[in-house]
Length: 151
Figure 1: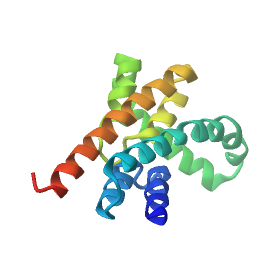
Figure 2: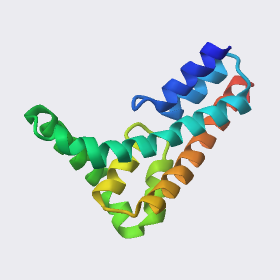
Figure 3: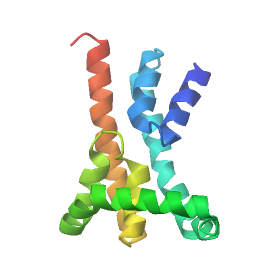
């Protein structure tokens, strides 16, 4: 049980799934669905401060390497084109909506990068990401719970 909960948490921290994968994983393993929601949601929120630390401090040193710089520019362009219009037009609400969509390529990683690129104040960006993560996690949780109960 503990190992499955840790795995669900790790999936929620991962850029490959976030809570969109951690929640279904935990529920499918037979864990308490409420506990899975809380753990995965909180794990997904922890990504924001880690990403901001990385973007503000470590990123500047890694851009000296050509491969990293090329990859970072590619990711930045994708984040700007995928979220740019919504965030520029709607600001805080646009960031919430972008992070909230439970699809690949949206979420706290892309939301953190977008808030860094658009220079959104850190506290405001954190709350926008947290609200978006909450609703995204809630949608995934509801779909998973209903589908496992045969609804």
